[in-house]
Image 1: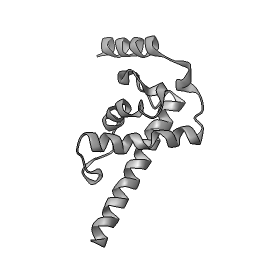
Image 2: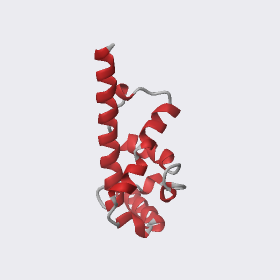
Image 3: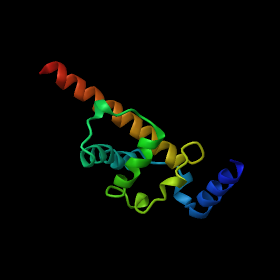
Image 4: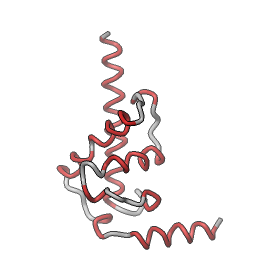
Length: 112
């Protein structure tokens, strides 16, 4: 197990980019929000059927490149929200956006 952990860290280190550890302006984060809905639409998923997880966040990364070039060709195995500021902001944004979409869906269901 330790061997793969070392290999994973080497892969992250090899892909490291300076923006990963910079503070993220709220306007930048707002650019990323549509990636959550884009992922759900692309996969034909309903927000109420999705559970927030690190794996979900990593899947959404592939859609974030449409809204911010820094996520284009991002090596998602290098995503580490516990170590890098920008990754953490993305992680928290996905959680927040998914909860908002779930709340909207529940509200629409009640109103129907």
